[in-house]
Length: 497
Image: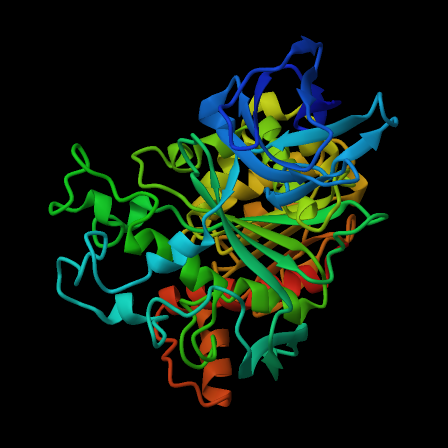
């Protein structure tokens, strides 16, 4: 006989808040012979037999139940047959007749739901809303590909894409360049088990971000897209009459949530400047920047209070846990069970997404947290409001407060806006940036890491005309979308990643 010792691991530490059961040779599951602190001891045969291990956490709503199928071979080694990466490779300890085997189980609140998210992008089923109430399909069709659902959610190779150049402005004109783009990396949709909101996160992990022993801390960018509530009931079907939210909600699997919340942010559909600035191509923008950073895109829900759309992300402790769990999940699948920790961290928001970012920045409980003070190193605001400088000022105040605390000398604060220069005077005062002749990108003489790019509609219209765009830049909504579709590349190119 031999002894199998099973331990549980929660958030990188051995835990007693879990329970294990064992099935030998397809028999019934049984409890341990005895438990000593975090170790559960089972007596197993020393002959080749199939063994199943079931692991459950006390907090079942968050961590669920894991099960692994193994085979004890003639050498007394426990070989995985069908076991998730949360089961570490078994370690033999000692020799007959005192042979022992040590196995650890890592509990995670994350589930890979990429396949289900892809399947939700189909033009059928109860979650496909059909035309909006006003019957206008034009805004819905932007970003469709053939077929839908797409064959894969992974980044596509696209040719002749327009990207912002470096520098982004020369004289009185925006500068762009054209190139083929094929981001190297993987897109995974994760569900956080038992969450309120966000329930889902899209993660783009570039191949160049190391997942091996000796890897440096992982760089992350958390990106907030606009609030879902501002676009209901036209979009996000759980706010429509045909889907009564009191009896049925399509969050997070409804077509609108997957399409507007994930698909159009993870993809370009053709050239973003010339054809469709509503598609943001965030992985393509990251690739064009030449910087390697893991993108985390949360999926908002419709809520009356913007902070409730991503309520769990208000808390710095949860944000840190989220990043650590994402890193650990991905690295376990590369065979690395001791992840290197969270590295350079940035947050970004587009349009009304600044409300969601401010929910985090304004939370007084975060202001003494190391993630807020030290690890969060960069913030980018992409046109917080296209027409009102007073609304633009609010997230800038939050950003400036953050920039002045903790490791202030290393913090990057960037604003991209199309607001009128005269109206922006309070913004310039907050960041110490001098105004210039539009369009301009100016940095503070006191801290070159603080900058404001003023990019009005006429600058985008002139650029679009010069490159033969079929998309008309005739209103501030068009230039509003273009800022998000192009300027992340500029922010990251100038970043410390």
